[in-house]
Amino acid sequence: MIPLGHYLIVSAILFALGTAGVFMRRNLITILLSIEIMLNAVNLSFVAFGRAQGTVDGQIITFFVMTVAAAEAAVGLAIIITLYRHRESLNPDAFTTLKW
Amino acid sequence: MFNSAFDAIVPLLCVTLAALASMSAEAFRGKGERMPIGGLGIVGLAGAAVSCVLLWNRNTSSFGVIVADNFGLFVTMTLIIVGLLTIMFSSQVLDLHDLPRGEYYTLVLFAIAGMIMMATANDLLVLFIALEIMSLAVYVLTGIRRDDQRSSEAAFKYFLLGAFSSAFFLYGIAFTYGVTGSTRLDRVGTFLAAQSMADNPLLLVALGLLLVGFAFKISAVPFHMWTPDAYEGAPAIVTGFMSTGVKAAAFAAFARVFLSAFEPFSADWAPVVWVIAAATMILGTVVGVAQSNLKRMLAYSSIAHGGYLLVGLVAANQVGKAAILFYLLAYAVTNLAAFGVIAMLGARDRANDELRDYAGLWQSHPALAALMTVCLLSLGGIPPTVGFIGKWYIFSAAVGSGYYGLAIIGVLTSVISVFFYLRVVVMMYMAERDGAPALPRVGAVGMTALAIAIFAIFYLGILPTAVLDLAAASISTIF
Image (cartoon, rainbow over all chains, first blue to last red; front, side):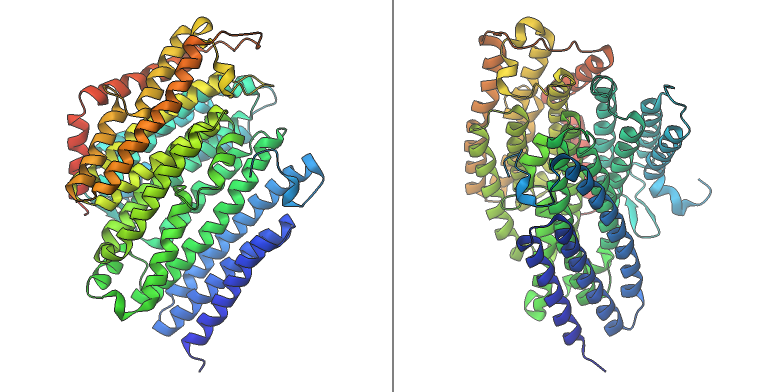
């Protein structure tokens, strides 16, 4: 059996990749995807912790998180579409009407 | 009720049902037909208020995850007041700006439902879901003026950083669950009471991630970057709603998690929150001085007020905890009224939110100028308004716990902040109105809401004892 620590390390690496993506990618859709990677990294931790404790709580929590992530993606994409209609661009640096 | 297990969620149910009813009403509304959807919201919120009064002192709990203790109910009442005032201010603003009524009220009600859930949640997972219900509704509200680029841009920035911070918050929950084996706050608290930080380094990670998540939501420095942009770009009435409601709900959850479950580790987090509080107060005030846009200025003022609330959290004595609740109520009423004035003076094609738009307001709208002055003085903490009493209790709590440094920074920043609040007053009374377009008239419902808010500001400022006693009674049940 794979020990808990391995799962946690993979999860931490995924989370770090997602965080880096949010800061370094210059495309709104990719930034949104990076946030989804962060949430899924957390899901992995939940499942691993749940398994280590021998309860199903961790896996059940994952379902809630997935639902929330889906809702978040829907709202996020809708906002991106309204933005795109104004500027015809997906580069976050193009949106400078407000002082960033 | 049929089953007492549902008692604690009755206020939440009232608001959620009102939100669902508004959504259905909008869906079945004929083209051009007008429906009193705002009235529906007021009925739902009134029902929630009545159930809060009935639940007071009963300390009920639903399924162990939603608790209607006095602390939660006090915050719930504050949120209901925020909701009622927002709906009253909105009725005129929506007509003027041609915003979609049904969607607007539905989102406001769903956001309030999320906030109430956040204030009463006793489980970290429920807290996360409540946070998302609230946040998703508020992101959309921020961008509700789709034809306005600033509104869409504000919505995106708010969404991006909000979703980013929720991921951190959720990671914190995962570690808490991993270490303690539960997401219930009471079980986490009992588990942690028997532990020390040295036992498990993962706890430190959990604590740090949860702190980052909350700091984003209450816009504490250094996680405040989204606040000025989101507050400036959103329609003024939405800014008022989110600067008061979101802050109150997030602070309630913050206090509940850190002062009950993570209380055993207060020696570890208090110094960090100390630094955040000091930085938040200083940055909010100093940068606020340099702003020429009224909404942006009030955004920085809202950051600074978050800092004062953090002082109460650091002090964490009986006075401090009661002061947080009182300050949340005081700040909610005052700030919402100030944003209500800005919102009602905005025109369809012109936001009228620059400082110079307020030049000579006294001549065209004498009553409004007077009411705005009261709000600004209360935000600045000048007696006999409620802002003074709130700040007084926060700082006396800090002194009582020996945090003299924080109290001194707080008083100094308050004094500086009076400068930028008074700048608006000077503009309204002393400057001449030169050629700028006339500002719209304010309707009766909006004026009534303002009058109620101003009455509350003076009443709580002169006779605060009754409400302070309630706040003190609220905290005795959980901390």
